[in-house]
Length: 155
Image (tube, rainbow, N blue to C red):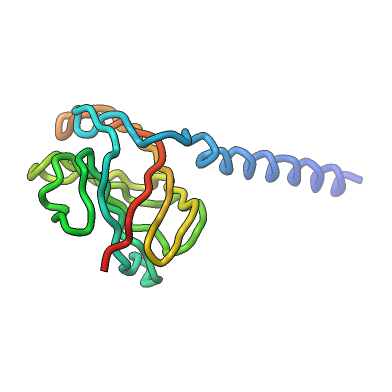
């Protein structure tokens, strides 16, 4: 009898934990990505994506998001403010993503273990959502942003 009670208790705890983890991506607003990057106001206006490989050597997509109108003809190094991440090349919720934020030519700041959701993916376009909440520190201004984006996949 004790084993059955312990098994039921363990199952309830495990199910409770998995529900909490699932809320990470469901809590991301489904509106235009906006907030602050390196302490400066940011609203998504453009960017581009590339096919690449992830750090686990699986097919991936490099996301490059900016606050200026930009597309495949523009260099990511010319973006005023930039948010970058590499995600697996498939629809899903990815919870161990390094989101990099950068102000112009300043040193990029790595933000490890963040969630990025890829909602839709085609040969030419990727639609997703992301959220970051990093307080200011002695080495970087705050970056707090949340929302959705659509990027063209460039060759």
